[in-house]
Length: 431
Image (cartoon, rainbow, N blue to C red; front, top):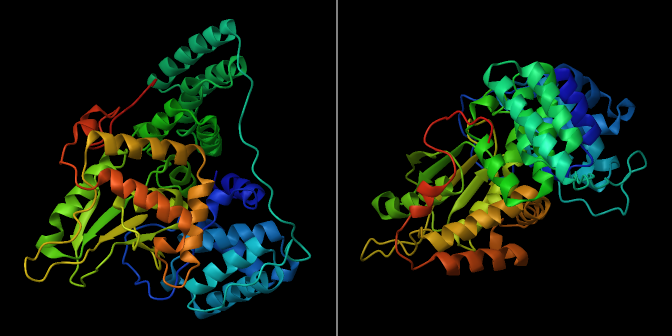
């Protein structure tokens, strides 16, 4: 199963802007973890061989290995010789590869504490690799009414088989359903549920979730949100591909303001839960921040852009994560504090029905087409001080969201109306 997924990642690594992984950057503090290394552990030996002799390696393979290294490798577990091999491969990519390869190599080198400048664009990249092409979006034809009805019948049979734990039979029924109507969100979601239970079919589960995301409907977005807590996806929930497609993330909120920041942390949590995330973990730190900082792993970039909008502060800093962590996103809450009153200038987003609806709509668009959000985060990280005000597109969006959210009462009825129970894991079948 691992080998199949890795092979799939190689064929798609240059075509998916959404899987670009940011490495560590100067000034980011490593965070201790109990997380796991996943695919990097499985492919480390193979990738180290490619990095050691990069001129002989396939460029797509180098890109995929750079992705895995940036997303999952534990720096502290690498020997000096292994670090040297990785540096050799990344420097080769930086010097000779395409613009995409050079960018990814620079991110990986930062993880190794090797600082290189942003390389000037070369209009087509190195001799061995052409510019990446856009991934072809899933867009089947509309089905006839009779075919849609037949699809629905077959899909319901598949759901019954899932409940009976007959996953192979369920996949067969749901494949027939999709032959009748390839745009059925009901069938796409449930075939992914069944495939997620079978090791060799897990890559297909991601493919079907991606197909559903490509449909770009509110219904498909809601199903992706539900997938975050559906027990059918328990075995794949920590895979970076699942996180990238569904927006699922393990989130921690850090209060740097003490008592002055408690309200802001509470408001941030309510909005995150309201847009379909699990309740974040909480901690505090003594270093007071005058503006928020979002620390993140590369597969969570689209959600980072959304959270930056929700925070509504143009001075929010975005830092790719250094080291390992069990968290995908860490929101460090900060604000200027009035020394006389002890009150923070900002209490984060106020949670009202209108603001929550705006956030949900924005997330639905991000799940359907994450590339724009990811590009915004990339632009912020490439600026010297990495704050969102440096990117005009994100700045205007953050200000718009902030204006809609600030100064309104603390009401959160929309949270209880969100489909599914987000407190704990729930079994969602046949939705």
